[in-house]
Length: 322
Image (cartoon, rainbow, N blue to C red; front, side):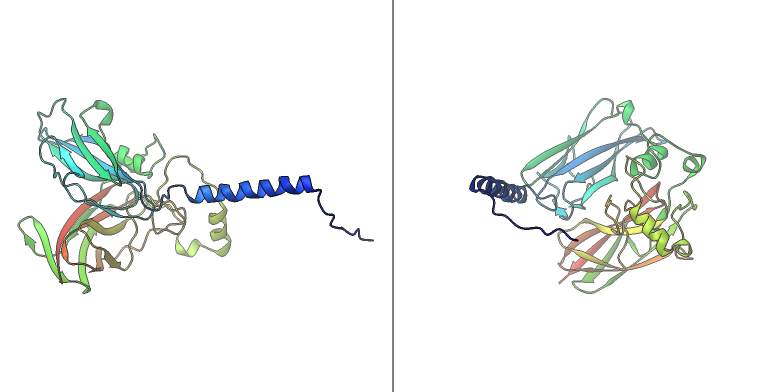
């Protein structure tokens, strides 16, 4: 025998309380909707990553940045809103900023007699000014193990014989050079082929399961598996990425390439994503990519070869005509 449930009208006092609670809930949702969005409209935090000494006694300061936006890629020309001081305001910094955390993005050489001076990188966007200060403080010295650890290839504060013997990959962009630069020309909307050779020592070895090892059961297990580390985690494996480094317009790359920034979302085509697997490596090491621009102008494209732990960068200047 099943019990029946009858609806009884609530007393008027309880109805008023219930209505007030419902109104507060709706107001709370409205207030939350008015909160700043982290998709766009936020600021950029320049970051000083550390320094390395060269064989000739000079130094290299290494910088990155945190774009607080998840989607907005900001263009900030060199000048009052994107500059270095003291000295030259243009030190080779990016003017096109990818989303979220980008570590070890570019290097700034300084002389051997730099001493105790500071080099400041100032970035202003959306009304917010942030400054990164670079010095030769001893706690900022970095090496390959530090880089691998900071980017998530290693666990925090750990190393291994493999990581200590790993050498960075070498990317060589094919094409005629004008002085020390590779310069290409293309029209708006027309594809430009970029050909780059990547050489690597095969370390660190990829630990992601191979295609043949993936079954529906193991794939579901990967989706349901909780995070196992509190620091940023990165899947080891060789890949090449192309992105705009300087330029006002947008570029489309075909085929789509892995992201060089820490996109931790599932299926984001990023080595920091939980289900990412390294793409196949061409047998001859030659990567072919087509790029198409939507606006005329002078662009600097940035190629990064990354083996999971270490990386190497090359740049191409592209003159895009109407």
